[in-house]
Image (cartoon, rainbow, N blue to C red):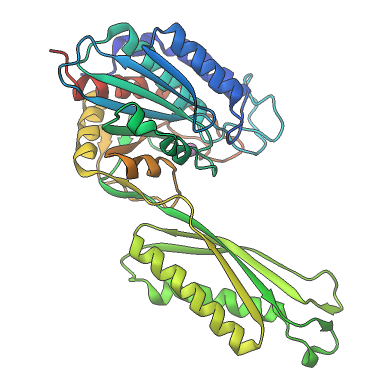
Length: 389
Ligand code: NI
């Protein structure tokens, strides 16, 4: 079963929705315009229930199948938020808000799930209940967690949950995923170094926090190089090093900040512990004071075995076997759908959007040619998981 004809027929309408979202990007939880449009459309489509304000600005709608002998409830999730960056495309529907851009394609995710809701509400060709979930604040605000904490899974009795992200570089109509860890946990750290300031000509009376910071940076790189199994993966990146204001002053303090990415809980624990040990050791060696503030962010996105092979079979139905890769190499980016996968079994899949700038690039634009494949995937997933009697 290839692309659903009706999904292809809805492409122009869904494209118009997508471009409207694109021109009006909103960030984090402040997705009021987007969520308002989503709510209004879901009501127009005749969904059985539409609820707003879940996870502050998230929207949830229920679409009941023609029958419900199965008692099954499947959740489908899209994210609505954009990024705090400036778009450089010259498309006619480019962002109208400076410093805001839909550079991760969440405009496409939202429009495609709305399209699928339209199809499902029209056809109802399944036995069970579909719950469509539109979340805010995927980009760093943990909107997915906020929705889960607001009772998303229990209130609607969601039994399995599925997510989808576009992937530039993968051909349109192709899908890729894997069981197990798919995307990384993303933690951040901030290390304060307190030395002893002095005239730059008198280093012997100082405790130079710049010198200490350099030692610390080198030492932190040994965690991945020397404490982690080379066949596993981890990232420790120092991305900020701030110190000093004058050429003739050894500053009193310095600060290093950065990110840690891991795919396994044990490795995450190891890195956090080693970081603490290295900070203490370097502090002692240089008679400086070092404080480590390590913050755990999004957890590892772990695809569940059975739901992943089911999602892959749906993708094969839509795209053909040759276009579905079930052995995707994990990526070290993070995704807050991870919180939903901690709450319920499910699977996250990537869908190709063809050549062009990558995610979070200022010239990125979601490719509307991928819309029929995405809508078909959602629709077929519901119809296959809960086949009509
Ligand atoms: Ni994204």
